[in-house]
Amino acid sequence: MKIIKVKEKTHFDNARDVRKQVFVDELKINQDDEFDDYDDESHHFIAQNDEGETVGAARWRRTPQGIKLERFAVIREYRNLGIASKLISTILDDIGSKPGNSSKRIYLHAHKEITGLYKKFGFREVGTPFQEAGVWVQEMEK
Image (cartoon, rainbow, N blue to C red; front, side, top):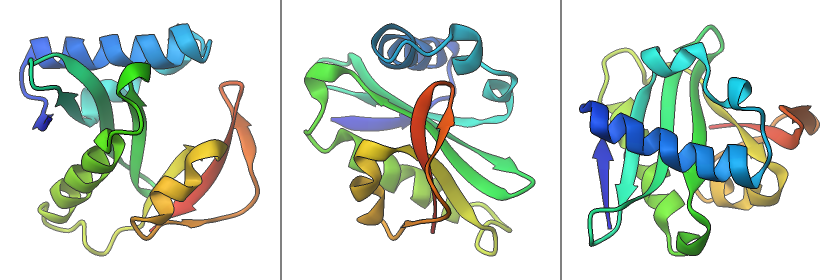
């Protein structure tokens, strides 16, 4: 398994394919909500299996509230293999390597069922759960 920072259009298209499978097809999130105007300004990452197939994706971006981790998606048959953890770790390293980011708040909106995953990386719950695009999420920050 390897994590790649997206720099090529093909990899970006692969990330969108994973997100479509997970968020649009599986979770029934509206495609217009999933594919937003922030894709162009975000830093995207993909996870590839040993055969070079893209099986996971995620992104991060700067917002007025800090740095937001978003769109973590792993294809169903590849879940619970540590892929999401590798994506989180790689993204946090990438954020830390950019000048000026060390003083910024890092946050995300986690699906309620997987807040434990983010807690392993030092995130804590903030506020109460809320619905976003029809899914219950919990804001978390590091």
